[in-house]
Length: 291
Image 1 (tube, rainbow, N blue to C red):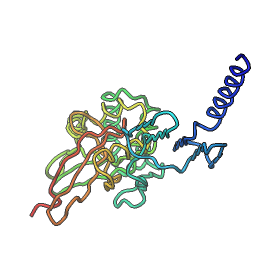
Image 2 (spheres, rainbow, N blue to C red):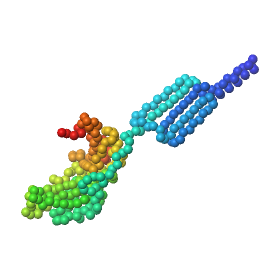
Image 3 (spheres, helix red, strand yellow):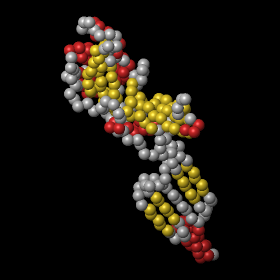
Image 4 (cartoon, helix red, strand yellow):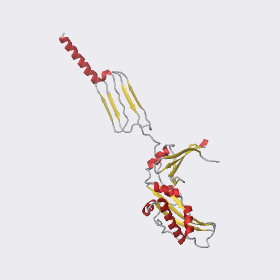
């Protein structure tokens, strides 16, 4: 009787070991798409198979799904996971050289007003610099680092007398062309303007929000963050890097984008993104054109 029990136990143990090695006659397949390279395929006794596929696997946008299905003992088990990722594809390259108008890259000959051609330009520039420093709180060094004066010019009339200051705001990869034009009269001047008249003219010409906004930017986000902001509105937007500008009142430095959705139906989208953070400020449905 004891001999019969021992034989039975031995048979049961062998069967258990065979089940553990072979998966009970069933198959197990696990597919994982993630980082890593190469494919490894191993086939054990009884048909157990493990497949791992590395980078180059498919990735589907944010909020991917995970599905797990298990079929009883000796059956099959399959796990499939689709991770986060996605996006709109290639980013639009920032290239200021394609922009028309004044240069985005001053040659350095007028950084402190050295290019003035008449005394009035020098006087107006000096007052302008004093006022923008006072508004922004920027030091001479900080102002020189962020603001590159392109040129000074003036008009003697006959309709208007003014001095124009063209400059480029530079913050990392961001370049924004700006100009201030203090108006000194509506007809040819009989006498040179007084210091008080120049101070008032500059005060009216300078946009306070621009300078407080500039001072509030420690650094701008990477180009990819700005691209992602537009992608969150619509893929394939045409980003206008030639006209990055400060928003009135808020002083935020914004870049605009535009996309045709259905030209035949006059349906387009426009968007604005803050370059400091890459945050989408507006995503609007708009007519492609107004007749």
